[in-house]
Image (tube, rainbow, N blue to C red):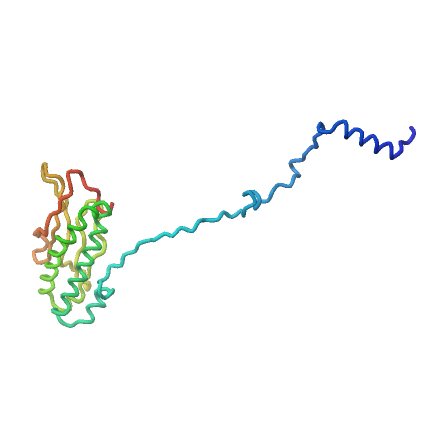
Length: 219
């Protein structure tokens, strides 16, 4: 067979290309095609998404005396008599009762009764603390500790005062839910004392909720 000249081959290829223009689609090998890198897959953006910086305030509560920002043992070390110690202990106990009371109530109950609790109940609790302190020797007063685990659910405990040396409880500050017929719900604030072996219920005051069942404590 006679050999076809190169110029004729080129002419033939050019002719076929012109005739078949737009009808011949090149085949694609999907196994060997180079795919965009992960960095290019986000419309040209970086593969690592940019996280928005959100300012999150996490509230914390330090149960301390307002004036000194110290715990009770540190405060007590600065004084030597009951008369000197008692006003500071009273202030310290009040701050604890307020902070732990609000913690126990939870947001919903605090919003409704928090102001009444602060204005009407806590001053009476302060008087009880003062009476307790007057009957306590210096060493015991310096070592009084306050619990920091108010009861949740339907438990009554707000806080307890106890001797930090031996754990003996001196006073229990509680709140009970009362539901008299047709009256709705009341919060009954009271205390128990070691002087009568915690048998008597010493009422400090009652705060009305409403006719609906209140939320669980700490809810």
